[in-house]
Length: 193
Image 1 (cartoon, rainbow, N blue to C red):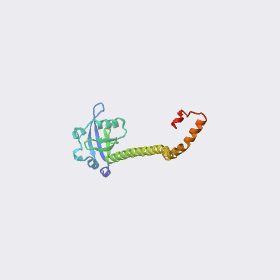
Image 2 (image 1 turned 45 degrees about the vertical axis):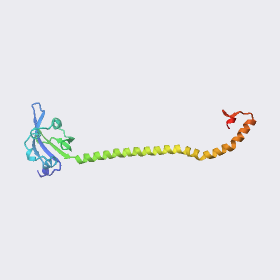
Image 3 (image 1 turned 180 degrees about the vertical axis):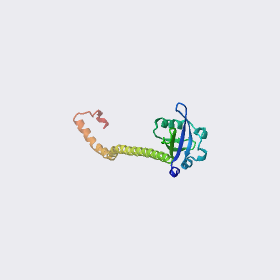
Image 4 (image 1 turned 30 degrees about the horizontal axis):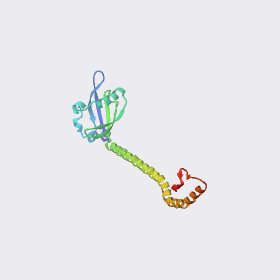
């Protein structure tokens, strides 16, 4: 009993209430440990000996479906559950001990903080991916700007020198074309020069 009462996980021992076909209709609290009360905030003494539908008239069939599976297969199951009224998350394990054919046990742990931490990690991971994408885009844009600026810088720096060379060489080129009987350079007539 000391081990049962000292568990950190919530623990409930139930008796299944079945119809004639073996379908789970309800289940009765046989015993719960103090951690059950601490985790759920529900007074233990108000549960012992009562059925789930009596203790929680608004409960849905979610629990019945899972517990029915354990009763049919005799195999333990584990699942996570989000209890919307309190916003809490629980990791639940259901199994059948060797304590009667229609008896089953449930242990559960409040994993709300773990779920929140996982969501925060996921949110930060998405932010890091977005930041990495933006950094890659910035690097790409800087590279493109550099590739565009290199030829522009060359042209800007060399344009005055090319202008001076053209002004010095164009009279010589025009005189040479005229003496050779050439009317223009390319498709441009000599008069333009």
